Image 1 (cartoon, chains in turn green, red):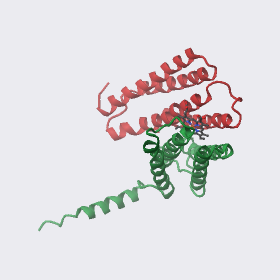
Image 2 (tube, chains in turn yellow, cyan):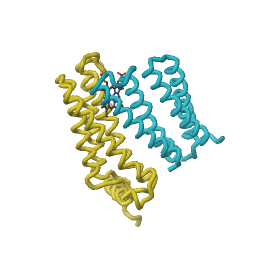
Image 3 (cartoon, rainbow over the protein chains, first blue to last red):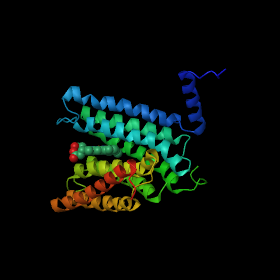
Image 4 (cartoon, chains in turn orange, brown):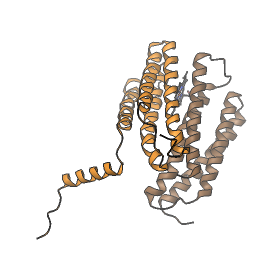
Length: 155
Length: 129
Ligand code: HEM
């Protein structure tokens, strides 16, 4: 008698387990970067029904623009870059508190930057800009040893 | 990962930090850096940060996903040179209000874009040299 064929659901579970063993699946921080990116994309897209354009000509132009660039593009790069680059080079990426610091800074930065434009509070925009930049600096500091370091100093 | 591709990703990070800094300087003191700073920032971020990041990662993964080796390593090397010659010239043109520089920089950057596009198409369709 032929061996019973696995159901589609069993096959899927098997594939997921295999990918987890191979280290293919996202770590928790990268998973949240990807989730956050989609939320920012949906927020940025609100410019379409509200202004009839992704980029309005009003004072809120940089706000919607940076919901897309800082919120969506940058966070997709954080999530995908943080996931893929260590696998491409074989060097580990700095984990622990670092990705969460990067995440806190980028959320606080993007939110303050955007809120500052909407509210017309220049100080809040500047603060957001600096926080977002610090987040990018944190990402760069995490990725640099992945690209150029040896496994021993990338820890 | 090929050294050239690691260079693309590293240069992307440097452009990202630089582009962020000039935007912050403009927010704090609009007169500090002369020229069309928002335009320079926008292009440093899009062509320097996002596109160079895409270049580095795509040159690594697309041949693997496509199942064929990269069509031309030399095209990819020239893409690196042209992209990094073009953007600084373009940015210098905006900051100095010199349109000819912007055009020269734009042509060089576009050269990199075409090299990348053709190299990727020929790679994923499996064209042999
Ligand atoms: C540290 C993070 C960032 C800061 C502080 C920042 C800040 C700014 C500021 C102050 C402006 C000028 C707004 C105006 O007065 O019109 C601007 C414009 C712009 N930014 Fe950013 N930005 C950041 C990240 C990004 C990223 C990651 C991208 C793209 C991926 C980006 C793309 C642009 C574009 C395309 C413009 C419009 C340029 C133009 O109007 O010609 N920015 N940004």
